Length: 118
Image 1 (tube, rainbow, N blue to C red):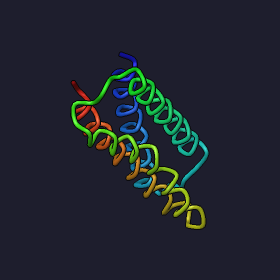
Image 2: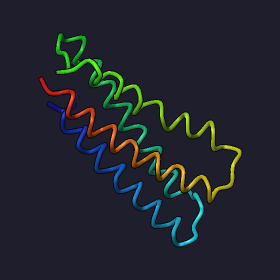
Image 3: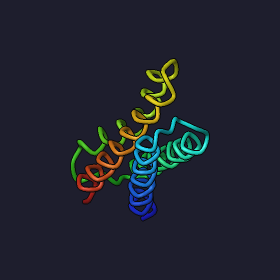
Image 4: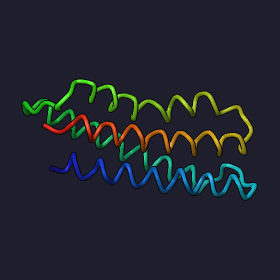
């Protein structure tokens, strides 16, 4: 199913972005357009993932565990929440926080994959 494969894509994409951001932070970088753009692309991927999940739900498919819904909701809400918290902060601090949030989404994606199987 596309929902399964997109979950892998989301996980790998955010792993790359999170590690990239941490590497840039260690090098003394700040949040720039490249990483910010990648985060937007990642958020779009998560939104598509959630929409595919809702489509599966309307077709009668259910996840293996109901906590799967919590992981989906967390994945879609965590970046906008971080943005609302970080928008008035230092771009260097923003780079670190967004990188850690990206790695958090990796964990949420892994947990979502382990609870979604039927």
